[in-house]
Each structure stands twice: as C-alpha cells, then as structure tokens.
Image (tube, rainbow, N blue to C red; front, top):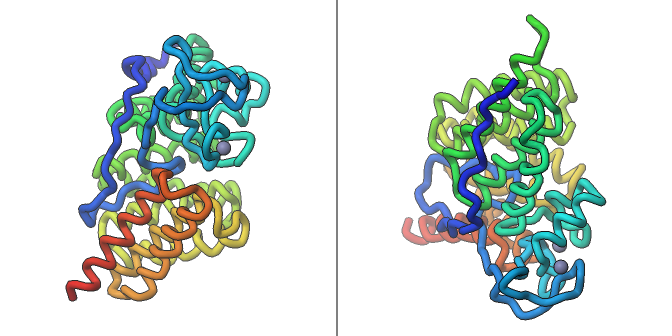
Length: 316
Ligand SMILES: [Zn+2]
Ligand SMILES: [Zn+2]
C-alpha cells in the first residue's frame, strides 16, 4: 500500500539562513535539532575527516555543523553516508563530538537515507522513522515547513491506522504526535498544536514514565505550545520539570538542556520574572557558545533572545 508520503522536495541543498526570531511570539518550537543553518558549502580549505581528501567540484566538502571545528568539521556527503551505513547513529550524529549534524550535512544525509527506504511499504518501521527524520531536517536545516508538516501528518496517520482499535498510542505514535505538534507550533497553528501536545504528554507519562528522555521532549514541547499561547502559568511547571530532569540526566552542556533553559527563561520573562528569566536565557547562550561554538546556529538563536530581553530590560 502506498501511503502517499510526499517527497522531501526538490533535490537542492540550498539552505535558508533564517534570521534569529525577533518577534516575541509565537515561541519558535524547541528544536530537536539546531534551528538555523549556517552553510558554508564547499568554501573551506581543508580536508574530509573521513577520507582525508580535499574539496573538488564533483565532491565538495560540507561543513558538518556539529561542534567539531576546522578540518574535523568538514566532510564529503558520500563519506558521511558511507560512515552512516556502518553505524546507524552517524545518520544524524557526529561520532567525534556526539552533537547532531546541522545544515547541508544534515539535509544531505536525511535525503540520502530517505532514498534508500522510500520504496518500502508505508507501515515499514524504518521507512516511518526515516520519513520523520527527513521532516525534522527539512524544517530545521532547510526551512521547508510545509514539506515537513506534510511528511509528519502522513506518518502520524499511518501510525494511528496501524494501532489496534481502542489501543493507547504506542511509542512511535507518541513520537509522531510530538513532532506534528512541534511543526504546527513552528508554523503558528497553535490550535492544532495544543491538543496533540496534551495527548502526547499524557500518553508519554503512561508509556515511558515521568523522567524518560522522550517524556521530557513531550513536556518541553507542550510547554512551548503554552508559551506560544502566552499561557505562562500552564507552561511553567512543564518547563521546570523538563529542565530539572535534563540537568540531572543530560547535564547542562547538552543541547536539549539548553533548549529547556531558553524556553523556561522566556516563560519567566513572560510572567514578569525578568531577572530569573534573563539568567536562564544567559545561561543557555553562554553554555551554547562554550560547548557548540559562537558560529553554531543554536548559539545564534539563544544569544539573539538573550540580547532582545536585555534590550527590553534597558529600555524600561
Ligand atoms: Zn571524504
Ligand atoms: Zn563533530
């Protein structure tokens, strides 16, 4: 059966260098990847960390967009694909620094992986996973929100169809609900995002328990939807719970923890607790600068928000 999953779009890796969000609301979705690509395709001297060869017209070097600097952060797409066929983690995550790829490397890998599985039946678990992964990548590294939403809603529909009648959502369905909610949030469809986010949190607590990494993603996502609705009172306990658990389990230097600092910081500022909110926004920005580097898109995102709030503070 053909699910009609849409194609990932034209085979172009032209990145949209989205500017850091400056409008106060709606809150941009918390990224499961770094939000804004900074692409430097084929312009770098240096060599591929996989094969140690340089850049050419046929085989341009991509910046991997992880935390690796210099030549350690350069690779040919086909070398990254080859590495990923040996270690499945390497489809999304740099084996050296353990941060996720962003930008051109992220998009190239997601499209290459999709090309390998898209001919399979709609319910094929790996195909669903890869479609989901491509959608997140299209949003976060290519700025293609419509393409991402279409993929995510198709995946959610396939997963719901596959559930036995009356059964609660399974892990894959919950994950799919979270991703669809985040995509709606990203696009400002808050009325669509809210019920999906609420259902995902309830199901995640039941299925995985409160402290599970994926439950925290659901909590943070629903918190972000409430932030977008300026319902700070509903957002705060969710975001506090997610941040505390992430500090404990992932540590302050993990991107998910930084995203939680950022979201809770915005929430506190929204509630009028500017000093506490700004402290969290500053912690997210300085931690990201230290861990991921000043040029990393997440750093730019966190710093922009910190500066915006500082600016408002000064003008008061
Ligand atoms: Zn190479
Ligand atoms: Zn790296």
